[in-house]
Length: 108
Image (cartoon, rainbow, N blue to C red; front, top):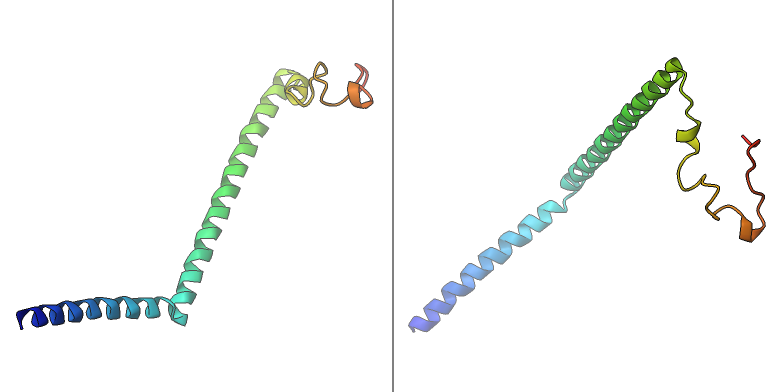
């Protein structure tokens, strides 16, 4: 008899927990909550885009200040602009083996 009462109590407790989870899930997928969730997601994406644009503008301002300082001091930026692995003439990336025309000193 005690066992039956124990298992009856366990069944009632499990049923209550399951019913509560089901009602939470149903409420989470209601149209009002789905619209609110979509609105919050869109706002989050918009904030991310806004932060990205701000970072790009900050980088552009830094580069513009660097270029302006170099221009005022009469420095040449050719080494900075044409430097790196993509413009290295010793690298065979652009030519040689595939028959591409090699850059000459007169090319700009």
